[in-house]
Image (cartoon, rainbow, N blue to C red; front, top):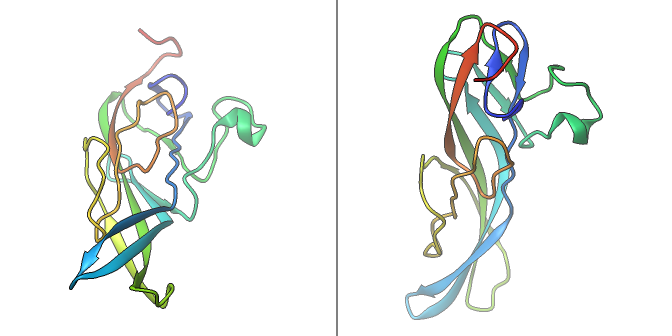
Length: 155
């Protein structure tokens, strides 16, 4: 989240996260199995009743070539001073292979796991990690604590 984990009432706060495709290996009925999890949608709940959805996790203002407080597909403008919990839910597509059959099957899956540490999942569950509010996240479903100020200086 930018700028620096806080927001100003009425100006855009920019949120972004990254999630990568990853493969889980295991055995199913004695056969080798793999599941390829690919992020397909990022759903933001900004903690004040507002939501946004994007096929990408967004990007920093610098990466987008925008000035601070510019509106982005994953930014939000808060109407009131408060402390908000922002939740990101990443939806994954699951392609799976049994034995030597390749990647013939697909299933879309939602994953939401606030404050989960990184894990090595079984073949049926995607990875998660908890990002910091000032940096992009890896494989994220998370909460940010975002104090919103009515003046432009962080405390």
